[in-house]
Image 1 (cartoon, rainbow, N blue to C red):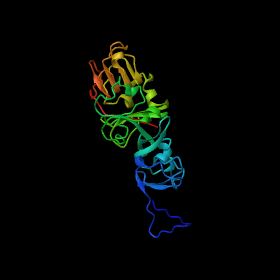
Image 2 (cartoon, rainbow, N blue to C red):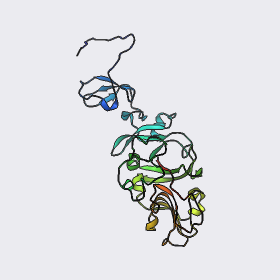
Image 3 (cartoon, one colour):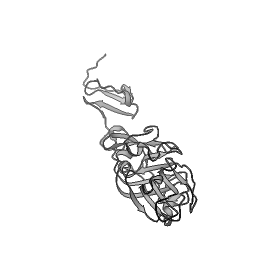
Image 4 (cartoon, helix red, strand yellow):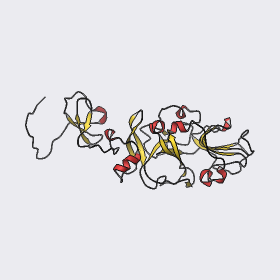
Amino acid sequence: MSQLNAGKVIASTGIEFPSYTESNKPTNLGTGATIYNSTNEELETWNGSEWMVIGGGSQPDGSSQDKAATNAAAILAVNPTASDGAYWINLPSVGPKQIYCAMSSNHLGGGGWMLAWKCTRGSTFGYNSNYWTSDNVYNETSGLNLNDGDHKNHAFNHYVASTIAAVFPDLNNGGQSSVPYSAWTWKQSGVGQTALSRLQSNQTLSTNPRGESSQSGSGFSNQNGYQWYGFNYTGNNSNRVRWGFGWNNEGDQGSNDVSGGIAPVRSGNSAGDHIYCCQGTTGVNRSIRAEIWVQ
């Protein structure tokens, strides 16, 4: 290997450093070695134990793994003009992970949301799936977008959310908030848990969802007797749901006939609206797409 010893190097056109991707950076170079990281488009130097960004400062703007931010809101604090897209988020227990973040001010009442989960019309995330009870992931890196598909990441498993929201792109526009695309929305503050924990434990949010148009809307069916809305409904074993409704045409939970929301057990779908009989209002009565966002 050629070696240059000089007190000062002056280049008239530039200095070209060895180029590596994030996945194939060497770890056997001498302290002070410098490379160009073509994945993150930045210069890095080896300090003897890890690669450090040169001139990167300490601003956690989520642009690279070493600049991972604590959440999407922290990125907006550093860069108020940040656009929607995948950013590096430093998550508890698992460290930096790429997460799709919504930064526009018209997303769920303000930017700074992280996509934790989404489903297509299907049964990947049925109620009894271990995706609701284990800190596993699904299409973790290929689902970093709003395209139709199934996706679960570690923001669902490990980020302690203050607010959680559900978005249903297949349903009419409206609900408890709004997004830049047509969808029905639910939004719940005061969570203080990970989505993984929240959707495993029962919590009543309303005993009158028929009277709350922002909850049931026009996409979900209902019944004229017993009514319930919240997290992890377990009042009727055949109609459990991770986030959604409990309905019956009678005043108790003994013979529920309609269910809807995220992971209704009766249909086996990842999300949807299901009628067995005796509905008061008829919704879409099928599998639907859904998203879960955390902030």
